[in-house]
Image (tube, rainbow, N blue to C red; front, top):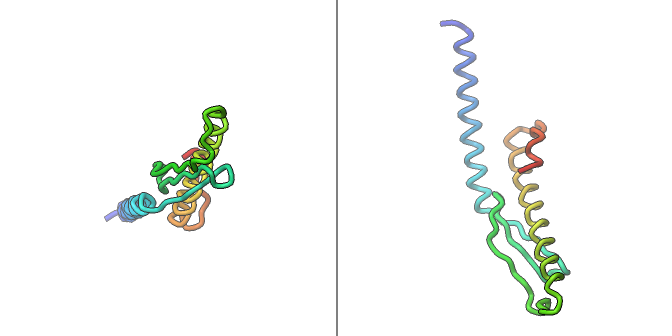
Length: 110
């Protein structure tokens, strides 16, 4: 048996283990939630660790038919904060998988 084939087999095993670990992290992240709010808590969103929105809560005191733009701005602000927190959670979990090595630059665009 050539030494190169043994190295290739070990590399393939590492890749398989890495994929299994990544799949487990993804499944775990689907069960984790992050929340973000805007307007001093008047609008709150809940997002899974994989970026799926689960809930938007709008305090009824902020609903003003004469100022819809403010409500829209608060909702967008909360959503963007939720997305950011979800990405940070994903990045944190994936960095554990990478063993402290820096993640590829594309992880900022998740």
